[in-house]
Amino acid sequence: MRQRPRRLRRTEAIRRLVAETRLHPDQFVFPLFVVPGRGIREPIPSLPGQFHFSSDTVVAEAAEARDEGVRAVLLFGEPEVKDDLGRSAADSNGPVQQAVRALKRELPDLVVMTDVCLCAYTTHGHCGVVGDDQTVLNDATLPLLAEVAVSHAEAGADVVAPSDMMDGRVGAIRGALDAAGLGDTVIMAYSAKYASAFYGPFREAVDSAPQFGDRRSYQMAYPNRREAVREARLDADEGADIIMVKPALAYLDVIAEVRAAVDRPVAAYNVSGEYAMVKAAANRGWVDERAVTMEILTAIARAGADLIITYHAREAARWLKE
Ligand SMILES: [Zn+2]
Image (cartoon, rainbow, N blue to C red; front, top):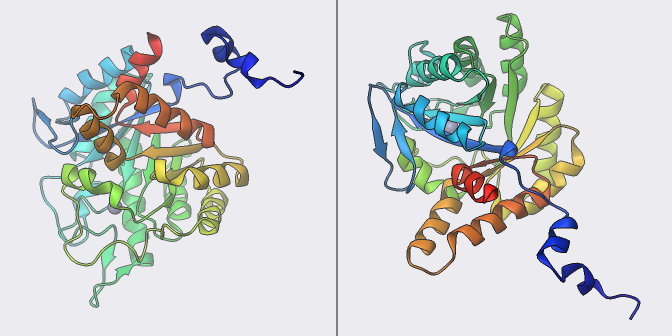
């Protein structure tokens, strides 16, 4: 037979030789949760295998990850105090800013990324300023986000990652960074961030569930794909260096469309709910965690993601070495 595709599937070595997609720990970003205090390393119940760290203990975790080949981390913070405007997010001595300084001091070659948003810092749990009629005010939020991004960059963050989904925030942050002499700080924009039920375990981890309403007036609606391309192009035009799609697994078509539409690196966030489902099913013996995880991560890369933000980063890096 002239056409016999099975020839290329005959042995493991041949299959590896012709693999169209290859995972490498270099493309992984490991999310880390930092809280106030010292000496803290507490398990997060909704995210098995993940912890709350203080800015001192997070260094050891990042060092272990780096030794396993994971060279980038993405920090999320939980503050001591919350207010209406999320002011503590820009505190130069907040947990994230302290963790950034500690990480860059001890592990200078680690890529330190920070999530930039207000929802973990506001009493109402929304990602922006809330007006009298309970709507989230876009333009009033921009200077606050810019202030947060500058405080992270001043602490030494290599990459700031706005996740709020306000219009125009990438441009506002780029302008503020440049004005502060931080022209080399990279912006990774959560460009196509969908209002998703897959964020549940994360919200428990940072206590950021909205106290009223939901985030559907600013995060994207999941039936939409063209709109994701529009968001990605707008962010690229405003100066985003990396474009992100979030979540990943139920949005592989969106990753592929965005990859084709923009000339920036594309990141995909393999979110908490995706991770928790694998962990829960594996825990019951219903799926093989390693096999399922590698299949999911490879599928995300195959769809077009250059970077993959995943709670499985360390385990996957170890598995790739075996
Ligand atoms: Zn937020």
